[in-house]
Amino acid sequence: MNTVTNGSAPSGDGAAADELDVVIVGAGFSGMYMLYRLRKLGLKSRVFDRATGVGGTWYWNRYPGARCDVESMQYSYSFSQELQQEWRWSEKFSAQPEILDYANHVADRFDLRSDMQFETSIESAHFDEIANRWIVKTDRGEEFKPRYCVMATGCLSSARVPDFPGLKDFSGKTYHTGHWPHEGVDFTGKRVAVIGTGSSAIQAIPVIAEQASHLSVFQRTPNYSIPSRNGPMTDDYEQSWKRDYEAHRADARQTKNGILANPNDQSAIETSADERREVYEQRWADGGTRFMASFNDLATNAESNDTAAEFVREKIRAIVKDTDAAELLAAKDYPIGTKRICVDTRYFETYNLEHVDLIDVRGAPVEHLTQDGLRQGGKDYAFDAIVFATGFDAMTGTLARIDIRGRGGRALKQEWEAGPKTYLGMMSAGFPNMFMVTGPQSPSVLSNMMVSIEQHIDWMADCIGHMETSGHAVIEARPEAQDAWIEHSTEIAYTTLYPKAASWYMGANIPGKPRVFLPYIGGVGRYRAKCDEIAAAGYEGFQLQ
Ligand code: NAP
Image (cartoon, rainbow, N blue to C red; front, side, top):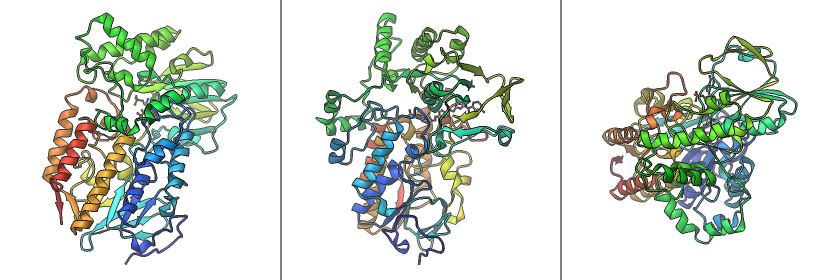
């Protein structure tokens, strides 16, 4: 019998604790849609989240300038025709507050909150092999025994602050972009440091610079960034999507990364220099990640890739007036796109402002924090606030923080010590009835997350529905199918230039993390076909009991 041993649920009283079929961890876009689908199967599910509300990544990442780099007409749910027709985005690339409003709207519209429990962390999940149930414990002292566990924990949800000595000595304020205060931060008149120049920093820096009296950016590795060309949503543009939304969504599902980007099927090096330039100029003018679809071989051919990289470097040199700063900002030692391409609004222009400095920490790292600021390169800097835009323990970090034990009491963390082991990025052998949404070795972060989330949830819900109707109690990945999938996923990654960059895709940002390419790079269309084929073949590679 399941029991609630302590604490009261802040919400989520729709299903009694001892009746849960499914525990869903995470109330972001994955967890919300999973709940929606499971309800339709008549299963009693509860979503848990440590936050006070829905939204996942959009709940936490409230830093100034936060917005999605996938256009909102594409970064939104497609599962409800009414929802996609009625919701109106105000901008082409919506900002975090609007995306969070959308998440809240979805929660209300589909009455999801009654099966959600907030301010609750899942601390452990142990599989009981006799009862074929998971024993799930929360930090509120509760215990649940669902038949299934769905880890909808997000790919970038474990924020990381480097272990700088003296962190506690600093008397000013510190912030991490992924844990931004809900009330916002007013930097007016403040001396601010930003450490890091990834996507989050690139969005935050221009906005912080508008307020701060002085802004120092500490850069280790420069990033390639493309102007977003964001702007208000126009009726014409909105209608061009909504008129035929279903067809557009269907097309997006068959693409490489779930985004309709009008890819050019020509090779960069087989195109004349003049024509190539024209293509890049047009894509630069259009803005956004579509720049990477300028040619068909930018991800696979180093020479082709360098034509795009050099084009962006030239743009940076043309924008940034200080030639030393421009050279520092121009990435040179990894192919463009192999670290997540950034999308910005006046990022490089910000370095032309008198009160903004760029400090290169590649050869001379931040030594330690001091009471007044930090010491770097033998020099002391004074700040009122330090912003860590230092990223996340991506894709595996959040799962590793939960004490997950499968068959024989084996810990997931240990099983994955040399790198994650999954079948299709959805299940791991030895961990029956535990699904991971957008897990490692699935397209996830290399795609429009909304497309990948919906695909995973639909597949998982169908799979659970199949289990229910066919009278199976347990589904589990077969080790040999898992090994083959890992090999396939790794092999494809090494046909591309991606492994050449020390990126978080490779686990390279976390000391001691194994260097393996985490997402599946074979493309969302191809991946979907494979998943569907496996399901149609009676869940080939899985063992059903
Ligand atoms: P990130 O890409 O991992 O960037 C972290 C930055 O911190 C890097 O510049 C890194 O330098 C630097 N850093 C880390 N430790 C450091 C140290 N000890 N000293 C100096 N610098 C240090 O993290 P992020 O910017 O938060 O972005 C993570 C991902 O979230 C993105 O790639 C993207 O997928 C997603 N995201 C998306 C959006 C969007 O949709 N627009 C916005 C924000 C984030 P190194 O490169 O040298 O390690």
